[in-house]
Amino acid sequence: MKWSLMELRKYQEQNIDFSEVLDLKKALLERDSTIIDLSLVKVDGFLRVEANDYLTHYHVETLITVPSTRSLEPVCLPLSFDVDEIFMTPEQFAKRDNLIPEEEILLLESQTLNLEESIIDNILLAIPMQVFTEEEKDTYPVGNDWVVLSEDDYNKQKESAQKDHLDPRLAKLSALFENEDSSADK
Image 1 (cartoon, rainbow, N blue to C red):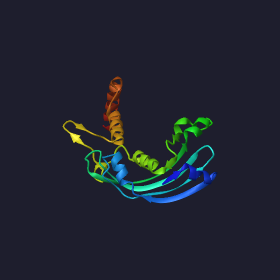
Image 2 (image 1 turned 30 degrees about the vertical axis):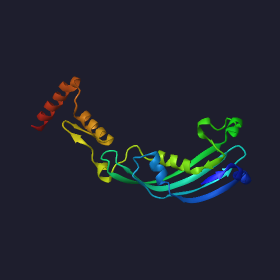
Image 3 (image 1 turned 120 degrees about the vertical axis):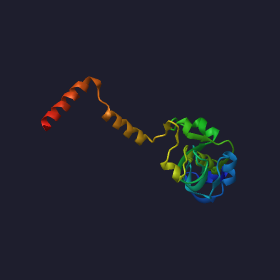
């Protein structure tokens, strides 16, 4: 998925559609040694050649195996995401208008547009920070005098503690109502 910029000039103001199945396992393992496995990567999209830039839109689908962040057990994650990127040569970047923020532009360092590098970068970015096995999703670590709670469990525990807690300024008033209830029962 590499194109020479000279070759791309023939397609000025046109879309170049592509649909490829790539084997990027070796390249990804070189970039991130924690990755255990990667299936073939299916990429569908287009490249639009403009006078001032090269616009890409593509969809990536693959299955990646990474270690669980809790137990280091292998976890297979299906990845499916869309990417929109704008590439420019240094000359195009110098002449660009300010409608596109500078941080959204990828500079081409050579006379080729290599989409594989972009795909690898975006796969690495799509890996979640926390990965759990199916068993770990529902259980949390526990130790001596401590426990990890989900946010929902914490909020429920906090609500029940607030219901059980009585404001000391109203304690005498509460006792008055208890005496009134017991005398009404008699």
